[in-house]
Amino acid sequence: MNTAKFRIPQEIIEREHAHGNKAWILGLDVGFSSLKGFCPNKYFTVPSYVSKLNSMLATVTEDDIYFQDETGLYLVGISALRQVIDDDTSDSDAEIFSRNRYGSKKFRIMVAVGLAIGLMSNQYGEYVQGMPIKVQTGLPTAYLTPKDITAIKKAFSQKYNFQIKIGKKDWESFSIEVPEDNISVMAQPSGTLYSILMDRNGKSIPEATKILCSNIIIVDAGFGTFDPYAFIDRKLVIKESIPDMGMLRVLRETSKLFSAACGEDVRVSAMQKYLEKGYKDCVDEETMNSRSVYVSEYLKEANKKVCMESIEIIKQITNYLRGYDVLVLTGGTGAAWFDIYKDYFKGMKNLQVIPGNKNDGISMHYANARGYYMLLRSTIV
Image 1 (cartoon, rainbow, N blue to C red):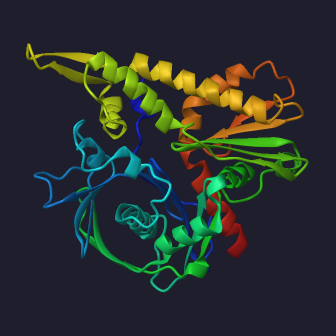
Image 2 (cartoon, one colour; image 1 turned 135 degrees about the vertical axis):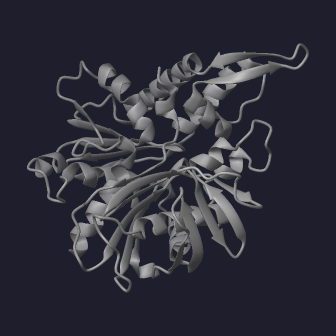
Image 3 (cartoon, one colour; image 1 turned 135 degrees about the horizontal axis):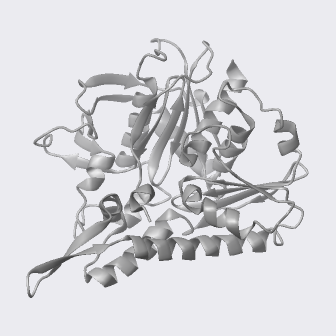
């Protein structure tokens, strides 16, 4: 098993997307694990991890993202995650993965970073000062309450004044204030629904009407929540958000097994660097001998266990998928589970199991953000 495929990625990919000239559209998904963005000239992912610094690191790498405002200097993303050590108590996993995080400084830094990267110019497009900025974001289905919607809109609409440095590029200054009326919030699985209906050019695919009229369940397997979202004859019949049933749970289970094998505690946030390397060097404090313990067997066991639990949930809430025509598996965790789902349901002759990135070659974890972008673009072009 390639454990690196399970780590939270970081990338900024320049690519032209269908867009108009009335507004600069940003589809932003600020998830528990990572920030995903989709805009006219790129798509991107940055791990949702922020570390405050006293000064810049000794050397600068292409993975470094620095953020600076009146409160200080911060390291964001994969480089910040690599700095996590197992006995570090500066951030608790409970704080990092809390639902009520919209008002926290670190969440707002992630929002600011998403807005900044989304507005950066490249060969495929340039944001023109004064052009309206429109943002589409989303929440897990059960979090789509007036309280949560107000909180996330407040995070997106506050005035941000900051500088950002990505890799070895120069610092860039930003002053951003998106009017609250320009921010829309939807159920996260709806993003994937719109994404599978749209092609690369932002046009409805030929079978869009057939898909919309079918009995369809979107299974959004994210990092923190597991969100089944189903329609029977165009009527929304299931809108669930099940906690502790995603990659966070997989990594917690892996961490328990891995810690037992190592004889050392391994935090979930520290797991990312071991997924990247594939192993951890564990130290026997009495003999001062070290040995390498590989993650793959523990990750494989934990991933299969949690995935099968998710399948049992789907069977129970859908009456064993009787009458369903399409199951769409999406989200970053969905990418890790797709082959298991496809194989498990292969005997269901009338059920089509498809990935959330069906109409685009990009990673499945972008499906919601891509759908946010495509939906918002269709309403203002």
